[in-house]
Image 1 (spheres, rainbow, N blue to C red):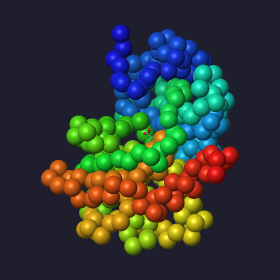
Image 2: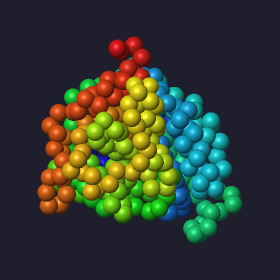
Image 3: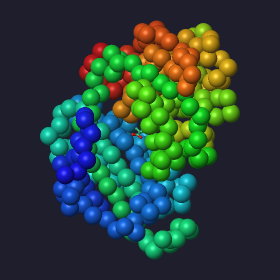
Image 4: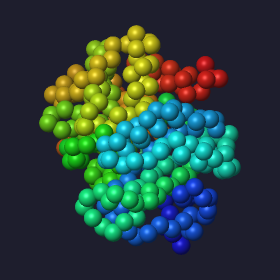
Amino acid sequence: MLPQIPGKNYPNEVCLNGEWMQPENARISVFDRGFMLGDALYEVIPFYDGKVFALEEHLDRLKYSLSQIRFDFEVEKLVPYILQAVKRSFFAEEDAAVYLQLSRGTAPRTHFFPKSSEPNFLVYSFPVKLKDFEEKSWRLLLAEDIRWHRCDIKTTSYLANTMLNDESHRLGLDETLLFRDGKITEGSHSTAFFVKENVIYTHPEGPEILSGITRKIVIDLCTELALDIREEAYSLKDFKHLDEVFLTGTTTQVMTISEIFTEKEKIFSRPEAGPITRKLQKAFKEKTRKSQA
Ligand code: PDD
């Protein structure tokens, strides 16, 4: 019997290297570089009402990650499997996401990148409740960002992210907000936005953060709505003047933050979403669900 987690399910089938099969039949070598060295990339792509959203942007980010780790792979090859993943599952008309992972493949273990290894790719879909996200709110733990200096690469090597996320999980909180050198970088699996005196701040793109697809969509929405958005890192010392906080991400969408804690004290409290968060949540819903107004 495989371990179970309440609310999380194993998919009924997965696509390994272009072939659909039951997960128990999906096998790769123990010498796969993703398994041995974390030499692998991933993406999570959302489907609203069975329709893929921002696929192009996710593929572009995968291409960027590939180029950064000197990994040649034709990303377009994955598109049919991504689309099939949702079609083949019973939730074709509902909200879902596709998990896509690509490792450099199998080769004798070396610290340099082997010249010829056959990449391994895995694709599967899972149902996810994307509706009514604006009715929820999250409570955060603030912690020091202990990750490496290439957070812009979407690698599966998420040990530091999971160590940090586990800290908030153990305290019954929802996500960990990270800081480095006195400035907020992002969440352990989300992008952070701060509102102070009607100005919205988020960390600029660069090696300190993952360039979130939802981040870009929300920045564009701010521009469309004539909101003052600045790609500047938010300082810890400005926390006392904070009006609103929200996090973004593919399954997180635009999440209201109600409380932020350090190990010692509560440093932010706003039980209800603020007006700017609400405006962006509404615009985000309209963008992702074209038929909904
Ligand atoms: N996480 N920052 C980090 C560190 C992330 O892992 C993620 C996404 C984001 C948001 O990126 P996007 O808007 O493209 O989803 C920011 C994914 C969803 C995950 O690990 O499941």
